Each structure stands twice: as C-alpha cells, then as structure tokens.
Amino acid sequence: MSSNEELRRIIKEVMEKYVNGMMETIIREVNRAISEKETTKKHYVSYQNLATFLKALANEDRLKILFSLKAGSLYFSDLQSITGLGSGPLTHHLSRLQSEGLIIQERSRGKYVISPKGRRTLHFLENLMEVLENEMD
Image 1: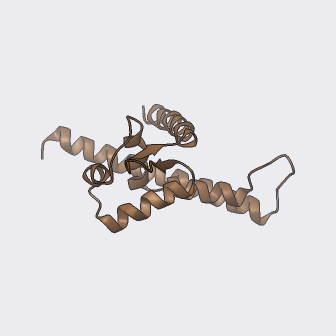
Image 2 (image 1 turned 90 degrees about the horizontal axis):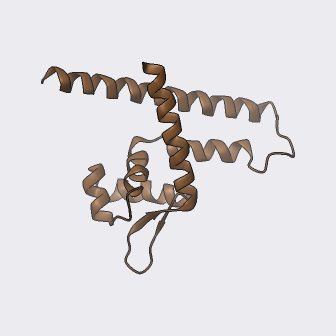
Image 3 (image 1 turned 90 degrees about the vertical axis):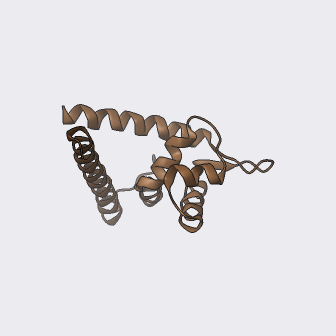
C-alpha cells in the first residue's frame, strides 16, 4: 500500500470515528433533553422526531446513497454498484431514507431521486462536512 493510500485510509477512518462520535453526542443530547422534558410550544418537531431523523442519517451507506442521488436519479442496480450492498440491505436503507422523506422512487421508471427535503438535508450535511474539515486543519 502506497503512503498516499495509507494516508487516505487513515483520514477516512478518523473522519468516520469523528462523525459517528458527533452523531452519538447529538442523539445523547437530544435524548437528555427529552428525558428532562425541555419541550416548548415553539418547536413543531419533537425532540424524539429529530433524534429519529438524525439516526437515519447516522449510517455511511445511507449517506453514500443520498450524496450519490445529488447528481441525478439512479436505478436500484446503480445504487448497488455504488454502495456494494446486496438487495436486502440496500432495500432496507432505501426504505429508511424514503420513510424520512429524503428520497422518492419514481413510479414510471423506478428510479430513485432526492426529494426537496433531501436536498436541504444534503446542504446541511455539506456545511457540516466543511466544519469538520476545517477543524482537522
């Protein structure tokens, strides 16, 4: 393995641990807020719903799917090639993203497309990634 490949592998490993740690921290804080009943009438989305939504994003394969759909619609087989997942796991991840309203399956051609909510979420995730990258400098 070349030094560049080794460096990429190490950076990827560190990023995955950092992102997973951040998601766990966010979920833990949301759950703490729920247990302390810090809800107010100003919030239209409950903390529990927010935690569920964030859990849907806390998966590398679902993130790959979401970022892949940014460029355009893709067939199931395209997503299998991109993620390397079998039918069962890919179906599970697509269902989870659909249940959160992040992607839609076109009825006519069966392609998967990112929803408006998914696009807004991607924008948020790209900003988060930029923050994380800047912290690593």
